[in-house]
Amino acid sequence: MRLWERRSAGGVQGEEVGRDDTDTNTSSANASTARSASSGARRNGAAAVEGWGSSPVSAATINLSREYTLAIHTSSYNEIWAKIHVEADGQRAGGGGAAEGEKEEDMSTLAGVLQPEDAVVEHALGYAPDTELTRLAADYLRSTHQASLLCLSLRRALRRARALYGPIADLLALIPLAPPLAAAHRDCAFDAFLLFDQMPNPFPAPVAGFQGMHRSFVGLKNHLNLRLLMIRRKRRLLRYATRGSGICLVACATGAAIAGLVLATHAITVLLAAAPACTVSGVSCCPAAASMKRLQQRMDRLDDAARGAYVLNNDVDTIERLVSRLHATVESDKMLVRLGLERGRGQHQFIEEVVRQLRKNHPSLLSQLADLKEHICLYFTAVNRARLLLVNHLSAQSDPDSELPLS
Image (cartoon, rainbow, N blue to C red):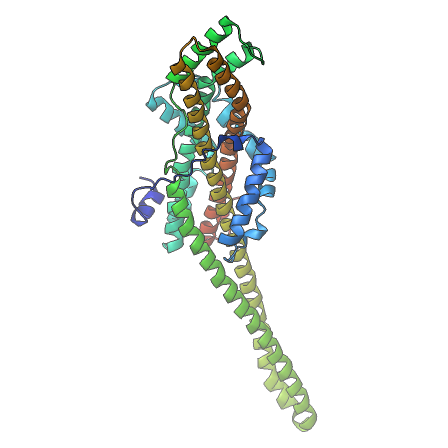
């Protein structure tokens, strides 16, 4: 058992509850990849102002469209794409293979994609103080690990979807755009319908696969917000105290000058008496400035960690919606094909109508598949950054010089 699993064993337990987020209106999926990402970012950004904006970390400053644009142009995104999609597309294109082999494939890919490595995470958790934040962080890191395996399993769903729609795509490329169809084309269409109906839907129905991550995110977000609020208050009090000491110092200096004028004969005594006060004031300025700097660094780390967790949670929401929509799209096409099969091979007009509807729906399906393929890579870009920021914050609590560089 990994260290963060042991730390989080006492955390929130229970059955994961499914989230019925199925979008049955498949016609709404005609947007392109970039437009889907940017519009989704705008929707989530508006919701964030309401849900996250009341916290110390204002979501109004988290531009999800900008985060999306920056993410897809990073070298880490391209590296993740090459490891996840390019190498995997040539393996078991038909979606077969034993479950044990698929698990080994996922674990091998995850070891090369998920950052920081498990050893680094264990080291940070092992040396971090045993606080509520450490326990919440351990639970969150464990949840991101499981969610990452689930995202990798969606690669196979993508491969199986392309295998499922292979006969349909070949059919649409073969037959003419306008009816009526020739008898040979109708027979090809009916045979393609049979193959399509025999294969299962590769995308799971809405399930609670990411529910553990959502739950751990809520606890972590609330605790980070609370800590950030406390540090801001402490910094504000320290700033007020520094200003008050400065006013006091000016008042003392003014009083000393007046006393020097009135008691000129005792000038030496006054200077000797004021010297210790000046020395104490001079010594106290440096610790105050150092404390302010340390508090600001802690605030920056907390703010970065909260932002990273928020962006990652948004990416998970997007993947959930895409999978739910793809499941509904495939089910709708299967229902349409079954209607054609039930009418029989001799129903020419009905076969032609099914082909027409499939041709109309196919571009939307391809767009959704491309969206999911892209957002799986975006997820790993976000999860690596969120994990790194969180590990840096934990490491800084025990050793301020042990932070890992951001890639």
